[in-house]
Image (cartoon, rainbow, N blue to C red; front, side):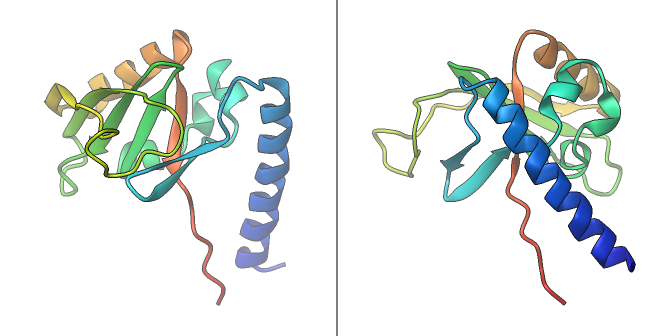
Length: 145
């Protein structure tokens, strides 16, 4: 079995596990649309919340992600791709449902931190997970080769 086949098999396995996790907690949104992008709940969210930090998606350190609870969200983004040690964090209120770039629905972003280091950003993530936030990542698009 080639590497690509193994990756596909693991992704299918993750999809089944995500579905099982979502069945356990029906209050959690499986996905939402935000600024024309589909944000999906992190694979292995329950294991992550139980302390298995090895299952935190790589997007949390290399690109961007959203932490969300019932009422508010944090958008966290890597700002310096060269060093990987500078993150920006903005908080915004969750209005629910599909959010379009309509002035009535556009959230007000409040800057929490610019230039936060990777260690402090990881601590911020851990603290939010402990109080009930979920990780949402941009939907991964598989490319057939």
